[in-house]
Length: 126
Image (cartoon, rainbow, N blue to C red):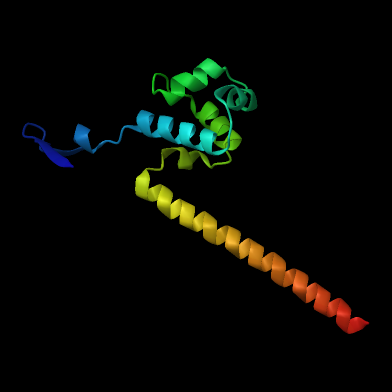
Protein backbone atom coordinates (compact mmCIF):
# COMPACT_ATOMS: atom_id res chain seq x y z
CA UNK A 1 0.00 0.00 0.00
CA UNK A 2 1.33 3.47 -0.87
CA UNK A 3 0.58 6.77 0.76
CA UNK A 4 -0.09 9.57 -1.63
CA UNK A 5 -0.02 13.11 -0.39
CA UNK A 6 -1.33 16.03 -2.38
CA UNK A 7 0.73 19.06 -1.33
CA UNK A 8 -1.91 21.62 -2.25
CA UNK A 9 -4.58 20.02 -0.09
CA UNK A 10 -2.30 18.56 2.60
CA UNK A 11 -4.55 15.52 2.54
CA UNK A 12 -3.29 11.98 2.82
CA UNK A 13 -4.94 9.50 0.48
CA UNK A 14 -4.49 5.78 0.83
CA UNK A 15 -3.99 4.12 -2.50
CA UNK A 16 -3.61 0.46 -3.28
CA UNK A 17 -1.06 -0.46 -5.88
CA UNK A 18 -2.62 -2.40 -8.79
CA UNK A 19 -0.31 -5.36 -8.18
CA UNK A 20 -1.75 -5.66 -4.64
CA UNK A 21 -5.30 -6.17 -5.92
CA UNK A 22 -6.22 -9.82 -6.40
CA UNK A 23 -7.68 -10.83 -9.75
CA UNK A 24 -11.17 -11.54 -8.44
CA UNK A 25 -12.55 -12.63 -11.81
CA UNK A 26 -9.83 -15.28 -12.17
CA UNK A 27 -10.30 -16.44 -8.56
CA UNK A 28 -14.06 -16.66 -9.02
CA UNK A 29 -13.69 -18.51 -12.33
CA UNK A 30 -11.29 -21.06 -10.87
CA UNK A 31 -13.44 -21.67 -7.78
CA UNK A 32 -16.70 -22.07 -9.69
CA UNK A 33 -15.08 -24.51 -12.12
CA UNK A 34 -13.27 -26.41 -9.33
CA UNK A 35 -16.36 -26.82 -7.15
CA UNK A 36 -18.63 -27.68 -10.09
CA UNK A 37 -16.24 -30.42 -11.22
CA UNK A 38 -15.78 -31.64 -7.65
CA UNK A 39 -19.55 -32.11 -7.46
CA UNK A 40 -19.56 -33.90 -10.82
CA UNK A 41 -21.81 -31.28 -12.42
CA UNK A 42 -21.76 -30.08 -15.99
CA UNK A 43 -22.06 -26.39 -16.80
CA UNK A 44 -25.57 -27.14 -18.04
CA UNK A 45 -26.56 -28.77 -14.72
CA UNK A 46 -25.16 -25.86 -12.72
CA UNK A 47 -26.95 -23.40 -14.98
CA UNK A 48 -30.25 -25.24 -14.46
CA UNK A 49 -29.82 -25.07 -10.68
CA UNK A 50 -29.14 -21.33 -10.86
CA UNK A 51 -31.74 -20.46 -13.48
CA UNK A 52 -29.17 -18.96 -15.84
CA UNK A 53 -27.76 -20.06 -19.18
CA UNK A 54 -24.98 -22.61 -19.54
CA UNK A 55 -23.14 -20.18 -21.81
CA UNK A 56 -23.12 -17.63 -18.97
CA UNK A 57 -21.58 -20.27 -16.67
CA UNK A 58 -18.92 -20.82 -19.34
CA UNK A 59 -18.24 -17.09 -19.56
CA UNK A 60 -17.92 -16.86 -15.76
CA UNK A 61 -15.54 -19.84 -15.73
CA UNK A 62 -13.35 -18.23 -18.39
CA UNK A 63 -13.40 -14.80 -16.67
CA UNK A 64 -15.16 -13.20 -19.65
CA UNK A 65 -18.18 -12.11 -17.62
CA UNK A 66 -18.74 -11.23 -14.00
CA UNK A 67 -22.05 -12.14 -12.34
CA UNK A 68 -24.25 -9.84 -10.29
CA UNK A 69 -24.40 -10.21 -6.50
CA UNK A 70 -27.71 -12.06 -6.85
CA UNK A 71 -26.25 -14.51 -9.37
CA UNK A 72 -23.20 -15.00 -7.13
CA UNK A 73 -25.53 -15.97 -4.29
CA UNK A 74 -27.35 -18.42 -6.59
CA UNK A 75 -24.06 -19.92 -7.78
CA UNK A 76 -22.74 -20.32 -4.26
CA UNK A 77 -25.96 -21.98 -3.09
CA UNK A 78 -26.04 -24.33 -6.08
CA UNK A 79 -22.40 -25.27 -5.39
CA UNK A 80 -23.01 -25.82 -1.68
CA UNK A 81 -20.84 -22.88 -0.67
CA UNK A 82 -21.23 -19.57 1.10
CA UNK A 83 -20.74 -16.65 -1.31
CA UNK A 84 -17.45 -15.59 0.28
CA UNK A 85 -16.00 -19.04 -0.47
CA UNK A 86 -16.11 -18.27 -4.18
CA UNK A 87 -13.23 -15.86 -3.51
CA UNK A 88 -10.94 -18.08 -1.44
CA UNK A 89 -7.42 -18.58 -2.75
CA UNK A 90 -4.88 -21.40 -2.30
CA UNK A 91 -4.01 -21.55 1.38
CA UNK A 92 -7.43 -20.16 2.33
CA UNK A 93 -9.00 -23.25 0.72
CA UNK A 94 -6.66 -25.47 2.73
CA UNK A 95 -7.84 -23.85 5.95
CA UNK A 96 -11.45 -24.15 4.83
CA UNK A 97 -11.02 -27.81 3.84
CA UNK A 98 -9.44 -28.63 7.20
CA UNK A 99 -12.24 -26.84 9.00
CA UNK A 100 -14.86 -28.76 6.99
CA UNK A 101 -13.08 -32.07 7.70
CA UNK A 102 -13.04 -31.33 11.42
CA UNK A 103 -16.68 -30.29 11.30
CA UNK A 104 -17.68 -33.55 9.58
CA UNK A 105 -15.61 -35.55 12.07
CA UNK A 106 -17.29 -33.75 14.97
CA UNK A 107 -20.76 -34.37 13.49
CA UNK A 108 -20.01 -38.06 12.92
CA UNK A 109 -18.60 -38.54 16.42
CA UNK A 110 -21.52 -36.69 17.98
CA UNK A 111 -23.99 -38.84 16.05
CA UNK A 112 -22.23 -42.09 17.05
CA UNK A 113 -21.94 -41.02 20.68
CA UNK A 114 -25.61 -40.05 20.86
CA UNK A 115 -26.59 -43.35 19.28
CA UNK A 116 -24.49 -45.31 21.79
CA UNK A 117 -25.90 -43.30 24.70
CA UNK A 118 -29.44 -43.91 23.49
CA UNK A 119 -28.80 -47.64 23.12
CA UNK A 120 -27.19 -47.81 26.58
CA UNK A 121 -30.07 -45.90 28.11
CA UNK A 122 -32.72 -48.16 26.57
CA UNK A 123 -30.72 -51.27 27.45
CA UNK A 124 -30.51 -50.15 31.07
CA UNK A 125 -34.29 -49.81 31.25
CA UNK A 126 -34.88 -53.41 30.22
